Amino acid sequence: MSEAYPTPSWDSVLASTHGMGVLVHGAYEAGAPNADTIIDFQFSDDREIQGGDVSAWVGVAGDRITMGVYDPSSGTPVEVRRLATNVALPANKIYTLRVGYSMTLPAGAIFRIIYTSVGVTAPEITANILTWLQGTGV
Image 1 (tube, helix red, strand yellow):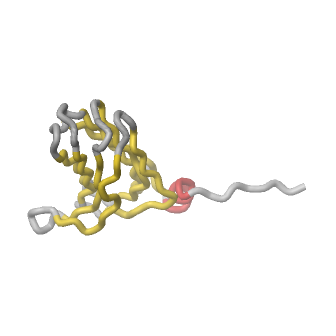
Image 2 (image 1 turned 90 degrees about the vertical axis):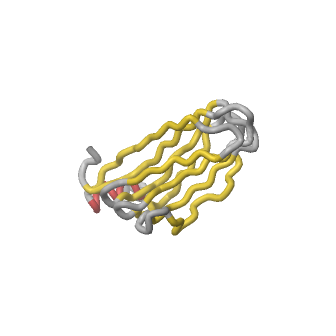
Image 3 (image 1 turned 180 degrees about the vertical axis):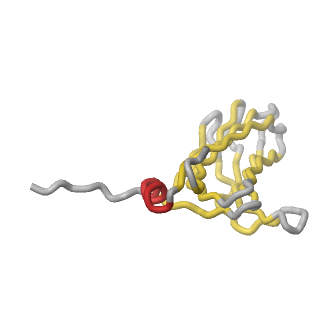
């Protein structure tokens, strides 16, 4: 009788084939009411990004997020790839972006989350992204 082996996940391929380790990066921002709040992640080495989540305490229905990759080489960061546009967030819930593949973020590039608040109270915003890099992730 033969055993069925599970299809390898992208996680296991990155770990076993490419010698990469996972590292989660988090950020917190005190948002502005009825305004945009920008959260930037920028790394000095190449990263594989595989997803993440954004949440806000005191968020209201109608708040939304936009995510993209930016090139800062011209001084003012310029968007080079849009990942999500005006994604509606339910009040006080977590929005999770998880994909079955990874996106390479070159060293120095910015992974930007723009949280747009429509409420009258400042939201407390957290963002976590799942990254992979060469080595153990330490």
